[in-house]
Image (cartoon, rainbow, N blue to C red; front, side):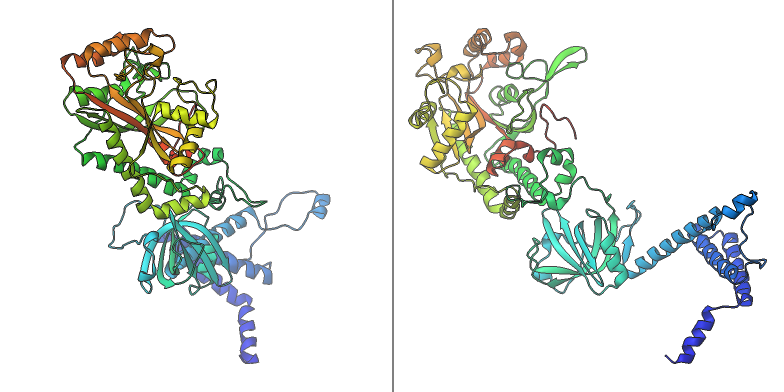
Length: 601
């Protein structure tokens, strides 16, 4: 530019009093016109702000002018007047300045919308377009060169100069977005978006190597970004901290504890590892049902409000039912037997909640969990049930292994675990053989009796011994002592009633994953007389805790009119997921776990 043009620009900036008076008159007319036409508040505030700026410039040139801003005089003593400090803008001026600032921000937001960034506001279903969104998981090299619209959370953002990087996360999947050709205004906007906000990003897919994201062979060249829902800036914990390997945290790095995760479970469930766990958990009931559907089973739903305990004992949640005592079901056991053996459905399964009022604050117990139960008529031997369970679990384990490889990899990054191993035809041991393995290992009769139920510690020892000897994390064990099984369990014909009661066995079984029980099952008693005998025996035997005969009369009466020989078992869903994934706590496999100390969120 020439020196002359610079001087002219300087003279233009130093407007004369006459020019300012004229401009004030014109701007005043604009303010009146905006108010008369009932323009939007933001527009009026913007015009008023411009008028105020003109008056301030006039006041600086000629403070005594009739259009200059006048300061209100306050009565004060001469001494106070001398001590008075220089005064700033009046309250009215501050209000006008604030309005002008908001109007400028609104104007900037509108400009941002035109430039491709901003906030959408609340989505209230006012419009519906033909736009199509692309899932983050679908972003790959085959989409290079194409434009996509993605809705995801902002996991991280970094802006510097004219460049911004944003990691977008949807479910278990992440992709990197780059803003390099959008102007500094958009870069500044992206850098200020609070983490975990939900955004709509329009971008071009470009080839790139991004090792830190799941979609590692592409990145998004951002063209526009609009906030759909803005997150509060103060998160209870950082997602990045919750995604850290809990066993390999470096000095100074934050590790989010389990209680903190559960207290803010909604946030914790956003992490890729939690997403993957719950998605695998979601698949298990579907695999369970599809396998059984294909083999003639019928899905049923039993009541969860009962007049008495499901299986006896004190571990029930009691409640009042219209003036009568009732409880929440510990199990669908009695009803699935009635449906299978007495109502002629023969093969039934149920997927539903189970309630156990056990004051167990362990890593493997919940007061409410999801039960996967089945019951089936048998023709000759309860091993028909074991054969079906063997095929069922092989089906579930194989499907998790083959269909959820990406999820398993995501989980292992935060919760490292050894891959689960199983045999195509599951290993079967008798209870006596399991006890002998413990004896060979050095477990004494004082530590584990021949006819006592396995302690948690001995279950784990046995699981390690089986893994070392047979190379499997999953096995079955049958012929449990009759004295430690429920009243409806069919006695073993080889020992009942010929052996003393303490040495009698039963046609029952448990199944184990990584040395912990996940299934308890048996052949059930289908003969009415034997059933009544066992109900009375168990109820009157010290320490057995069987229900009073009157409390289950509707159940026992069902067997008066002939019932199919039958058997079945119940599976704890959360425990299966926990053990397959090698999680250290069952609460990680529950969306909102319930234990003796937790009833919220």
